[in-house]
Length: 464
Image (cartoon, rainbow, N blue to C red; front, side, top):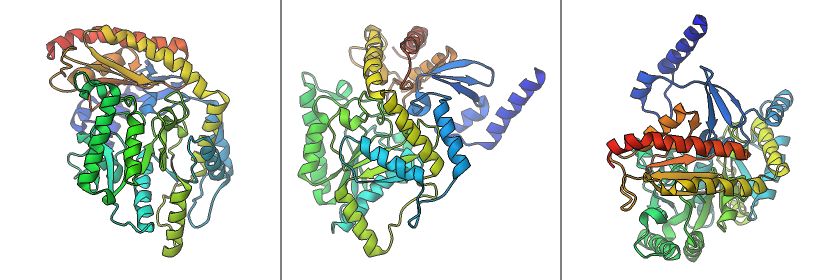
């Protein structure tokens, strides 16, 4: 036992001495060290001390089929035996990449023509932005270089995707966002709606603000608008009534491309197969990752319409080559696992399951609406957030910002529940694996309720 503890201590020391962790306070990490996760099973993970946690965040909004799904493990193993790697540059391909592309295109709620693979959602968004630029150059409108995103949006952490992300913490110190990226207002009705304003009226106001932004920037300089159907890390913001219909009308008026970022919302999360379907979006470009392989392998994808593809293909012929891609684009192992994940989603009726279990989950979470610390409970399907406030009536936030929801996430973790303190609001995110049972959803809600009571005294001291 002493040797086991010694080995674990050494492992933690090696982490601190060797790794720079994403989205982590590096100084604090050097003081407290890592929580080392060693095993996962279903909706649960286990740390190096044997403690069990129910993962109500699916890792990072990603592991839709839960941990240790044998079919995905077998798909990876079999592909590794046959062809562990080959690229898709210069006319090369592999069966897994081809089959996955056909399967993905057949599932989409709007007609798309082609798929290009990436290794992550951040890369998918970067690729989507580059494709929009490439298209407009090919279409003879090279001045269309600006991309409109939204405040509190999350689209990744690369240079272009990080610029599109509308969270200040992603920009400070990195010289982002770059000048081609503009940010429209966040469509959070509960937080930003005016007194007496209906959701429809709020949506129209947001559409009018978008049009004003376009006119001020110059309509012929705008390449694309990018949006998550449901904003994830920005606070799980569900679009208000009529929002995307009105936004789409503005974009159509000025011939601006619509990029739908399905990295979190895709593959059943919202109760439909894609968030674009849930909210009636008609995109020109779509991005995918996370649940594409249920996070078992790093893979992302971008799809484009036939109109875009024809212009892109013609330009590649003129230039001699389409000069974009990654070493691992269409990696056969990642594609084989993703193909099996899509097969499982369809065989197990992920849409039907989430429609039913998501309704139950949202209903149970609404039990917190009367709690004095809870300002709003929001969500759709199996994605939700609970926003904490210092005062319900005024919707006043805690000061310092984020301290209470950070404390909540820590107390929840001590109780065996993994939630996430979202960086753009005093909210706790919830995004359980897609096939959680009713009893597992009850366990998540019950542990959340227990944590809410435990944090009440702390919240009182923090500025209620």
